[in-house]
Image (cartoon, rainbow, N blue to C red):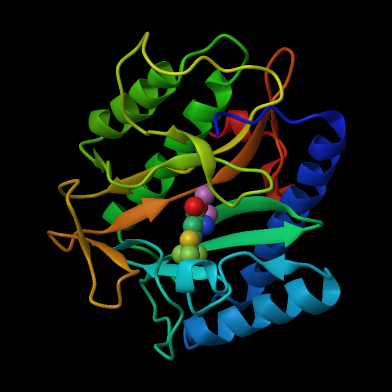
Length: 260
Ligand code: MF3
Ligand code: CO
Ligand code: CO
């Protein structure tokens, strides 16, 4: 129990797992187009992870989850189950990849727009990405989790969006989900203080309407109660001596801190 501080051997394995998860997103990007089903995306990722990366897709059979990736479309917030439904122009989709390599996990997700998104969808996708980067920029030893949650929440509210409270980021390592919980809202000066060697995700779920959620009868897919659009971005992070390393950084993100 408690928060597990990673040693250098573990950090090396986390770096590998993180890079593999990022590689899957880079690989799948060109396939995310109108007419493909989320099941087809799942199959491509599953094959890539198991055959090319010689790794395991962490979601598969995790507490009974039936697929290898999560695909959450439009008003789906998270944990969407890939299906035969095809993507169509105007959809927005979160693809969430978690790879287990050598017993350590890397967890990352990003949004894709199919064709030209509506003005609202495109603002939501952009602002949710900024919420992630605002959180990441704050990560260093001595900072409290409440400070980070508060900053993320303020940015979403400033744009008249809301922050999902029922689901959160999480410590990650040998376990897919471990302590601490990383809330994307909060009160400055409260919560756990970050230390060098912690690894965790930040993964804000931002709704265009109200924050409230509903769980579908499949017992996995989380949707917005008011059916408004939702967007999410996620990275796995390492607290370093003086800041943060993004373990799941993609090559399209060379200077993530310059996006605003
Ligand atoms: N990858 C998700 C997260 O960011 C968790 C998915 S759990 C699953 O924490 F079972 F739905 F895959
Ligand atoms: Co996660
Ligand atoms: Co994830």
